[in-house]
Length: 111
Length: 122
Image (cartoon, rainbow over all chains, first blue to last red; front, side, top):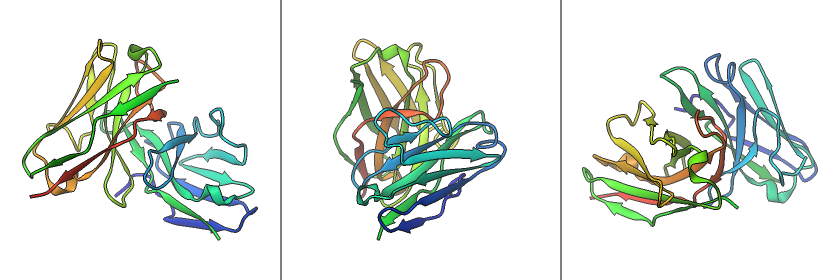
């Protein structure tokens, strides 16, 4: 049972905008930054968004992140076929002497 | 650039223990915390713990405390994770990942190792 809640799936046609939500609580998202990871089948996750809305070098600007209160979201604008992947949110949780918590993951399908 | 190279797949019997290594290259090893994360087949990511590579201080998630030990060999720029009393539910791909910070763990992981598959089966 993941501490952060994400929808299991999201989909869109090429060019559409897809938004993935990530819901937490005051001990994690409400008090700590959110990062997002992209994972293709059989490969390691890759850092996609950090500090709620920052993009590492090389990540296309069609990926954007935001945070409000105890929730965060990842938006993919101009959806492309190569965006088909699993997406995970992550935050730090101040309970239990501190630990990293992940979302349950969202599979994005390009129709 | 920074890279993490993990040891190969392991097959273990229930009750046994496993050690996975993660060798870092391309950056100053003591300047970044290393984390361990696992992913069971078809499941999501689960954080295991971290180690400060400068002083060796390590901490595991409450779920793994008592069963996991994380250590490092500074001259070899390698981090190790030992997991004991294996059960079938421990079958997963185990990843190491570099934090951007040296002193305080965060949820910023980049890069990741390629993953090590651990299969626990009788």
